[in-house]
Length: 87
Image (cartoon, rainbow, N blue to C red):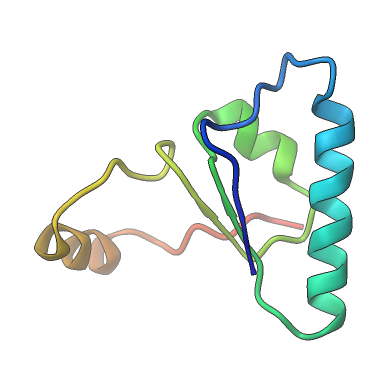
């Protein structure tokens, strides 16, 4: 399951707590069915920190890497640890 927001969620928003609750609920439902969860739109360290404890399996966004060619992506994946969100 790919959960995303574009642009990344605004952690200063009045709705941030509600948005985070929705992401948490969707992630829990996906895991209950054995589905792997990736969170998209992780643009800042604050986003990454806020998503810890959600139990998403992977994070994706400008914090991890900017868009790149397929060749550069191959090198990136070989040299970079998997971006797992710690539970």
